[in-house]
Length: 407
Image (cartoon, rainbow, N blue to C red; front, side, top):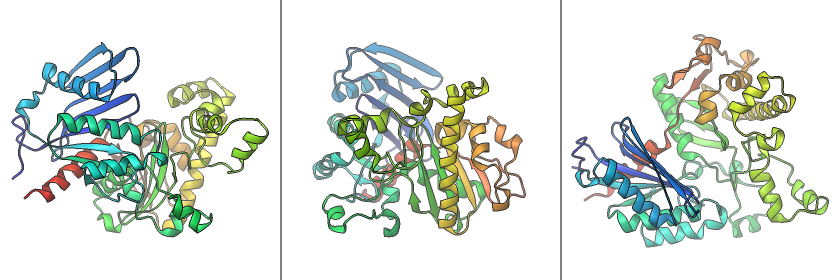
């Protein structure tokens, strides 16, 4: 029998998502999905920081200096002590950590020990913006919460990609030596959403072929057959694939050399350009779809062009993945943009009735936040909006692993 929270009577998991200058957290009940508390600690390492802590209907905001992730974890505990729920009255069964890159080393969640942490750190060259922050967060959390800590990897869901999908056409020995392959990202979201699609449609996961569009500031798409990913748009890094908020997505690889030789940019400058100054921001100056929508309504040509480029790439992947799957049962939109932008969903699926996608305009325009079908009743391919919940997915995977290993 698992230890239980005195508040809920069920096991609870603390989920931590540690960024380079921020730390997000949620205290959840995996069985029910109930969120007991959540928070965001921002501007770690800067002159002043901000802490947001929410429990129930109450939100608390505090301005204070947060020097490092150790101080952030101490602040996290202070928020629970001050505003609740009281961690002394709740038995946390595990701490689940989001880790962006698991490389070829980790294909499923794993309990973190010193060896696992060292391997996550060794993978930092593959995710230099993400894994170092995860390592810092894990170290600080292990010092303060003496329960099993579980790493859940963004790349894990795509670790079983067919070799034809994960292999780049470069010299084999070079690729093997430097671990160059398609890893994919947002895997926790893609796995969660694809399973939710099956639940909503009342279809066994094993019988379902679905394309999932995870569209936020970072964006990716996956083709999932029978619960297993067979393709995804992101690659060795999160730069490949769809047009994103500030990332370019797919480009001619020779553009790197062209920018270096002709524009006289350094490798570091090119990396910054393609990751932080491109995508929608590079095309029109905005990477917030709400602002882009408003500009389009005012007749702004740059915003309209950026939107069209973005949608064009979505449709390219939609068609490609539909043929890769061979049979398509559903298309699901998720994450901030995918869940909240009806105009984008309409543009991505319009004119595809001959391929079995019949969008219902009224359903698409609905602002409800629940998972729902937005295609017509007679549409052979179901078009859906499915809110993602990566924190809940991490909590459930962490609790399941700890339960399996418990004597």
